[in-house]
Image (cartoon, rainbow, N blue to C red; front, side, top):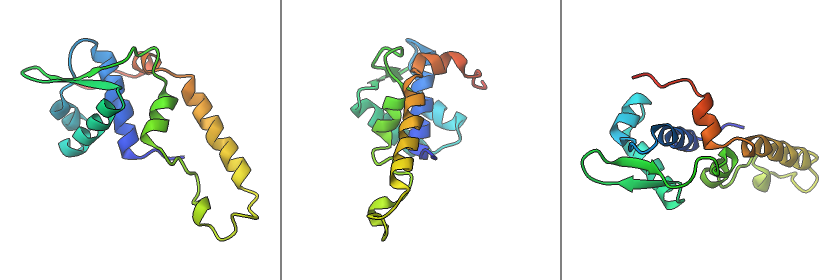
Length: 134
């Protein structure tokens, strides 16, 4: 399974916010560090604010802060929220989906993938990641 850039950036932004504690994460600095357009990062941040994972702090020195306890946010929950379809294959549009033997194994594989991510929290990820370059 490959996550979209949107989800990848969401996880990275949440981990950055976890590591920064009470210091807001600057979206322009984050986008420059990750070499992604500011507009894309802003859309990701907006989705995370709407999902109540981040809160925005305006003004000088503003940016993004965690809205939840990082010990209570699992990576699996974030992935489910950012990747609503989570399809491993295009089963709904497949001509043989009524007779397909792959549907159950693919569903089991997706569940196993999410089970692993459900055991990891933002706090775990922030602690185990290498430091970001300055």
